[in-house]
Structures are given as structure tokens and as C-alpha cells.
Length: 305
Image 1 (tube, one colour):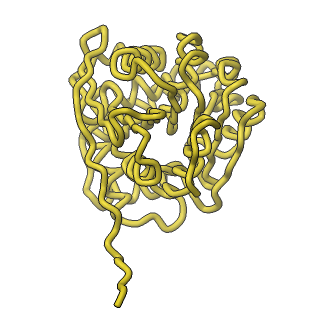
Image 2: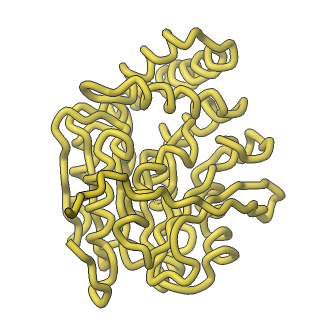
């Protein structure tokens, strides 16, 4: 008699190591999958989150394609990274961190870059800072629930909003985060700001756990960097690179119009919008994100359906 096993596929155990940036910041990174990969996916997390926001996607990629490597890491000031100087809370510094990490930790082979929220903005900034690296190494890019900028375009015409109201809002957000809040209140805030419809409590709790590790200076410094972010021009670096652009239909932080603008700027882009999903697509639509990332592998590589 033949029986069908219902045992789930084993999880890939990531290998952790520490990378030190040129200015002395220690950044932990995690490697999944093959040590001799056909392609390496580098996945960047968003503002006040950490590498764990990509866990479901990283596991899905290496299960589907055992010959690939997936790398996730914590941005400076986030997760398990070392104490950082709030003056370095800029997208330019994050892009430099990414370039240094690639050159030191992944010196060879094709790369697919995937950025969620602030991670996507970091990838755009990398094209501004080190276009040669993009041209020489990157074979695909994924912009997930992110933006090329021009936040609050009408309000920012007001110097009062630009110079006082917006910075003041970030200061209050950080003060509230440092004071802490009850699990219930934090979970409610995550549901309202980060997720779409029907978010499981486990995902809410995971998001809250990540945000609680954000260091002083992260909310204010990177919040202002995101507000000032305007890099439509930087997308030119990806014009000849296959790209996927993914949006949640009810994303309150990076609404679909921001993603449509990115896709419209890229001749080789494929745009996907997920009904009912919010900002946390790597959680809310992890299988779909895995599928779209797999589509970016070099055409010479076979993908099993």
C-alpha cells in the first residue's frame, strides 16, 4: 500500500555572519541555500523592520530552487545591527552599505536585488551611487511596496509643513516608540498602518517585535530621509534590467500610485497589484512575491513550474 506523505518540506537553516562597514557599523547577515549558487537574491527590508520580514520569501525561494542563494540582512540601526550614529541615517549611507556588502560578501555571480519599502529606495539610491555595480552584476530587480519619492508633493510646498510639521511628527513617533506601548496597542497600530485585510495575529506580532528593535534615531533620521526621497531619475539605471513592481491595493504607506509610477518608468517592468493587501507584501502575499522574484532569474537558468 502506498501512502502520501503530508510532512512539510524542511526549512532551510540560514547561516549567519557579521559584516563590518567602512565606517565601523556591524551588520548581521543571513545566507540561505546553496554555497555555490547560480544566482544570489539580496533582499532588503523596510523602515523600522529587520531581515525577518523576508523570512517567508527566503524560505520559499530556496525550497523552490535549491541551487540559489538568498541573503537578508539588518540595515544599520535596525534589528541586531550594532549601535549606530543617527547622523548616518541616510539612504545614501544605506546604499553604500549595500555596495560594500556585495563587494565583500558576494564578489562573484549574478544578483537579483529585492527591496521592500525603504529597501527599494536603497536599491534606487545604489543606482545613483554605483551605477557600474548595477550594470555589471544585477540581472533583475524587485521593487516591493516602495516609492521613487515625491511624498506629500502639495503639502511640501509649505515651508511650515516641510520644516516643522513633518520633522515634528517623526520626533513624536520616535518618542512614542521609545516609551513603548502595550502589546494590544502595538498590534492595533501595526494592523492599521502596515497590513491589509485579515492579517493573522502571528504576523502582527512579528511586525511589532521587529519595530521594537529599531534604535534611537531610526524613526526620525530615516523617516526624514524617506520624506526627502525623490529618485525617479535613478530608475534609469534599471531600464535594461528585468524588473517586477509589486503593490498592495490598500497600502497606506506606499499607495499603488507610487508603484505604478515606478513601473511606467521602466520598459522591462512587470506590474502586479494585490487586492486587499497592505504594505507588508512579503508577509501578506509571500507566495506571490516568491513567484515574481523567480521570474527574474537569468533566461539561461531553468525554472521548474
